[in-house]
Image (cartoon, rainbow, N blue to C red; front, top):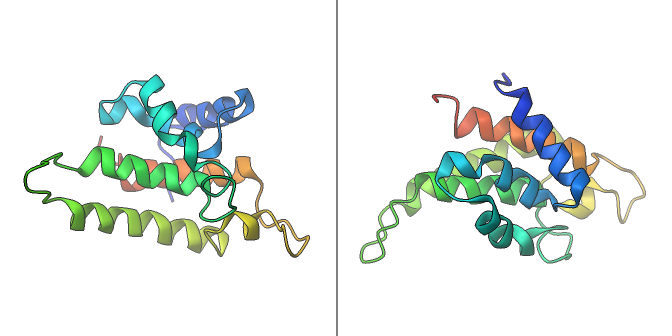
Length: 141
C-alpha cells in the first residue's frame, strides 16, 4: 500500500492525541476533500467512537473511512438514491483492506478486551485507515 500524504496521516494522529475519537480523527482530516467543514464532520462522526457508541463493535477508524466513502461518492439524490451500490463497493473495499492488514475490524478484538492480547493500538488503526482512505478514495487526486 503506497502512502501518498504522510502529512495527513500525521494529522490524524495529532487530532486523536487532541481528543478526537478514531472516527473523527479520520473523517475530519479528510473532510475538505469531500466538501464538508471540520465542525460538521466532527459532529457527524462523534457517535462512531470506541466501536460505535462505546459498544466496541466496528473500529471507529474504519467507520470514519466508510463515512468518507459516502461523502465522496454519494450523488446526494434524495428523490432517487442511485449511488448506494457504488458507495457500498468502496466501503467494502475499505473494510476488506483494513481486515487484511489487521485480521479484524472489531474494536474489542483489536484492543484485546476479552483476550488480553492487543492486536493494534488505536493510533495504529488510525494510521492504517488513513493509508487506506488515501489509496481507495483519493489516490487519483
